[in-house]
Amino acid sequence: TPKIAVFASGSGSNFQAIYDAMKAGDLTGSIALVVTDKPNAFVVERASIAGIETLAIKPANYPSKEAYEHVILQKLSELQVEWIILAGYMRLIGDVLLEAYPNRIINIHPSLLPSFPGKDAIGQAMAHGVKVTGVTVHYVDAGMDTGPILAQAAVTVVDGDREKTEARIHEVEHELYTKTLNQLFSL
Ligand code: GAR
Image 1 (cartoon, protein in one colour):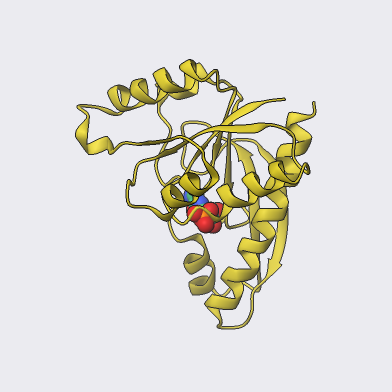
Image 2: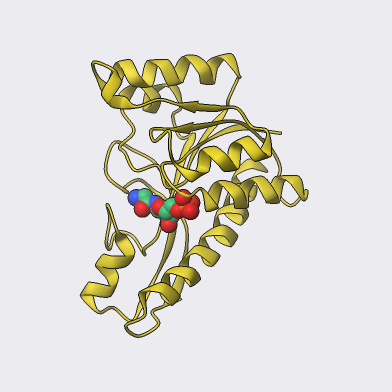
């Protein structure tokens, strides 16, 4: 069963959903490492409670993205990580990791891509006044939320209510991510 690393920059609710699904036996595989660029992010606390090793390093402390990613890659190699799963990791993946993990890096994004890539996709969708938005799981390439799409699910916007819309999107994310990863890992 595959060994994965989860990359996150924020709350880590998607990390939690993946971890819980694996623990419950609903998702094959195990999480060997959490990687974060934000040492104060709540995901660090979640990982610690789950007993999962965390690599928390700030890109600003390295001379280049390449140098930063080399440190990550070293750790991933040590732990024999096979898949990189992005879960709210808010930076572009560079050539070092893309070349080391071809077709083995997956992302989730809170919109129906190619609509509303980048930051605050939910805010962008609300501001645009769309009635339906959703969630996309896709392979990662060098672009911002680009790369071949694996799965999508639609979410109806709750009129003018960002909080309710966001809560529903997160629920759908947790379901869609575990389901899609299970299919991918079972191939
Ligand atoms: C999720 O909604 C995820 O789709 C989004 O960040 C949130 C992280 O939440 N990712 C992106 O916007 C990537 N461009 P979480 O920390 O609770 O999992």
